[in-house]
Image (tube, rainbow, N blue to C red; front, side, top):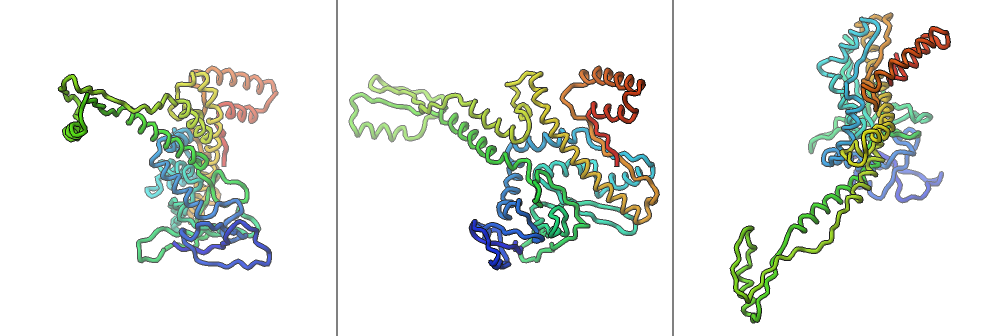
Length: 419
């Protein structure tokens, strides 16, 4: 599919006097070229060249569909972040009804869509949520756009974090013109993870893992092939004093391989011996574990999260899981902001259409289930003891009730942040 970009070949710096030409390009033409991004042209200095970025998205999706470890990395994240679902709770009953109209809309199904948003956010590194607004009722319907088809992001020349419009070109059947084009930023909300400053596009959680996922896949394939050949065998037949003509006759008689269970009859002049290939493929489980450790390190999870539980006892597993829990809590906070943005927009549209009063207190919380490494039996006594200590501190005036409340929520792992 064609698109317009600024290009130059090689790695040399473009002199100020050089005149860059704009040309139409395709993916095949992108080879051995790199993009020259200028402010406002839809890219940033930290973004990958278009051909590399497309290849990364396609490889990440293929790995998710075909590689069990890649699938586990993405799905484990979704299970932790959204394992118990998510709830949007408003103080004002009128606002709660407005939230429910958006959340439970038959075209939104947010109770299910949040899982797709989280999964694809981790898989593709970004989500483009497009709004479809009914101006008469304020009804807001959202749709997820495929990041592969968002070809460019035009930003403010002075602020790369402020998008102005998005170039969206979905695939079309042969012979038809694309229905895509530039869409204003007011119609699309862009959310990106694993993105550094001065970049417009996010990166998949699988991006640093893909080379090691390939190595591990190839290693396992080699092990399967080696084990297959190790179990194979052939017969070596020695015929004492046989002439060449006799050897050729016997070879013709036994040209077809023998079926398992075949009984051989021969005299003392023939010796039959089963011979197996000496591949010397000894146990190389440490090699496999080293590859899995690289994958686990890149995913930010301990190896027992990837079905490797033989190297850790329960206490060690709990301690090893803490960094992963913190990572999932970070992702929860990002998803909290994402959902807050969507609900805010839905409420604003209902206010604009008169479906919700302008004086209604549009305060709400996005709540997730608690994330923690300790079991319920361990948290119960600790929470009771901590609660008693906070109550004593509040009674003596050491902390205010609001400070005690904030400390208690922090201890239990709930952000309890309000909008």
